[in-house]
Length: 399
Image 1 (tube, rainbow, N blue to C red):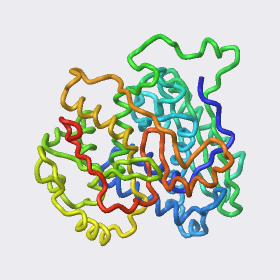
Image 2 (cartoon, rainbow, N blue to C red):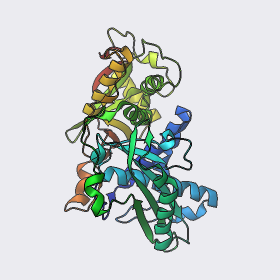
Image 3 (tube, rainbow, N blue to C red):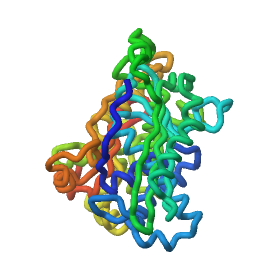
Image 4 (tube, helix red, strand yellow):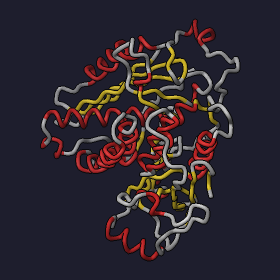
């Protein structure tokens, strides 16, 4: 059964920006373009959306041309859809271009995990609109129309990630004149008389409950490590997905381990060195050492990235589990590529289905947002003279 739809959803502005970035990086485009475009979403949210207890558009929105406003509204709609899917318990995501090209048009995204673990995937169509014509009836109608046109025809079909067992059409709109804001969702209906017969089969299959399709995990984590700036990890994922040539085997990716309120995250060193080739990060592969003193790095990074705010990272355990699985697939330890992977799911931070007592204090307790697959957006890196350093080799795992 699909999860019960949320009566309301609470999220922080940085969570919305991160979800916009997550959905943007599922596209097929040059990595550098996607990374820069995704990071710009933070600035757009800062200037075009007011920070408060309800969603309100900034007066700066009126300075945008119609095409620019429509583009921004569409990206916010995609981000709102991602936030909602995470709040409903879904974990893994991919662009819905993986659907059969014989059935066009199609929804925007594919999600898995949560309530459909081991049973298939769900579709999500996203729509956003910022115009004075926005009203509740129009947004509700848009959700229904897009569901019937872009989601319903694909229900019970199959894609590379599994059978489509459910679908959503999410429409989000706000009127910049009076700040009226609406979120409507149309989803697959299951009649009470058919609930028993429509339950997914419990017969064992290639993807057991609690596991994720290897294809879908690669797609989701490609987006995550792209946002982190870990270009070498992205290159290996692309090679496994059949895109691009095989990267050099002697490459090593450096990660810093940072701790915030008792939680540990991996931050890619490549995030701080966007113009230095990866081989410059290490002197030796067998005995990895940083080729610069930490105090010199501190001085350099303060000149280049003085704020060190809004840094994409990964939960240490979630990232480590995936990178070890990735090394196994690259080195062929398991023989044939696995159909599914055992990967952890973490509790989200910065978004929830309902408002609970004390939720408003969450910002001060947890200065970051975190999604169920482990991706996090750190509000600010903690001050540390020399954090722990990890080195990942594509064929040897962590050194």
